[in-house]
Image (cartoon, rainbow, N blue to C red; front, side, top):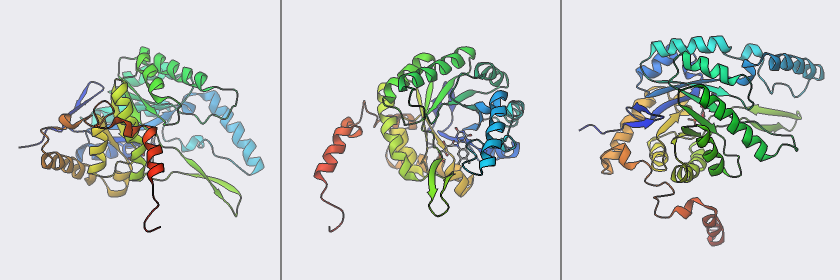
Length: 336
Ligand SMILES: Cc1cc2nc3c(=O)[nH]c(=O)nc-3n(C[C@H](O)[C@H](O)[C@H](O)COP(=O)(O)O)c2cc1C
């Protein structure tokens, strides 16, 4: 008997939980078709960045580039305009074309952190046929006068204005870098967000010590990154309503099982597809079905959330108190 892997995300019925996360995988129509042919349940398009919407920001960007180039250092915190894969019109055209080309749901993604021109653009995204919208809201804040309350207020305002402008469901792709994620998530829920994508990954700076240069380089994830996500999936899905998505560090079946047990409705994958190719989708889907059967589950839904903070046998394991105990009872590694 075939295993029931079906799940619901943002009100959309999906045959299984594996979704292609925002990435270049669907930058071309052939790429999107290949994902659909390989059995992906849903596709998230790469983000359109706020800077791409805002011509003034681009003008500023040009001026900044001219400045940094004349100093010959520390450039490229923004990509060159020519490096943007799509401008706003191309993005909408691509979205509509992908929507036509594949029968799986397609999610658009916007990345930014100010009110900008998002509301109008979100409407155009909805009109172009997006089944959902992912808002990727993060900014590295360096201004010592901006408080966390102010920043969170802006995120909530952006979410509220986008959610009230469109009927298409909105999920927020969060970062883990907030003092009280449950509080922020709750406010975003009230503002209209129907789901949370945990978590975004970022460029991390590194230093070339000989050259005295700062490098930022995108590295693919490792399964080690999953654990941070498991904690917050478990805590948020046990305390804040809405749908949850894991993104970051899912490489094999067991990773997906853990995330779903902690409350994930869908599982986004990027790095494992880039490393192993699209055949990975069917391996994961089949592997998940086998895992559930071997562990006597009747369906994916039966397992989902079984280890979230409202249901785990020891929910405190997700909290800090256990961390202290682990440190105090640690007796050293190996023979030491
Ligand atoms: C080359 C590349 C491009 C990406 N572009 C975006 C993007 O435009 N917007 C976004 O929200 N995430 C983007 N991501 C992040 C992925 O959607 C995903 O969250 C991240 O890779 C973690 O998942 P993984 O461990 O399965 O790779 C990108 C990732 C990669 C590797």
